Length: 169
Length: 100
Image (cartoon, rainbow over all chains, first blue to last red):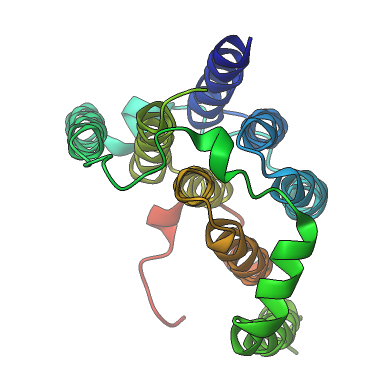
């Protein structure tokens, strides 16, 4: 059952991501990316990480993607130049880029499949840590400096976004 | 239980798809979306490895990555709006000058 759920979610995530890249209309791309993020949230549930799954839905699918959708609708540019992908960047660069990306994928898969699994738990059920309380304790004790620094980052991003996007007169 | 390798390979595939999107697409918004795919692929690695190590640190790093992704999206989209105002296009090839 668990294996079946993994493959179902993995398939949804990969297909949706491929379509995000293949889509010409940015609106559909954003919608498909939300689908992909939903599938990833399912994978997080499989990994005993309900907190991360919920944050994925609320922050990523809920907040960040709505921001993207807002900008797509605001700019109202439904599609790329009608000439098409191959004409826009040249068929040769397209081929080189595709080959390089596939090569990168093969490389990472090869490297990851050689990871030594000796120090990982052989029976993951024995080391289940899914408690939100544990995450909160770690976040506000060991990682409290990073947590506070995050607030500065958000403040800077907020001011930066307003300054960059405002109309110059 | 699904072996760890499966999660790692899935995240590698997602990361490669995101890279392909950044390289192949000629639309600033789609390129930003591809960066989000790459961030999510790495998030999946963090959660999976943290789960198999029996620690919550992976999920905490994912929490911070999400915060940075939100900041990146806000600033990136503000830049896209500012650029679109100048050139009326989202094709990155139109933005070759640092100043105009």
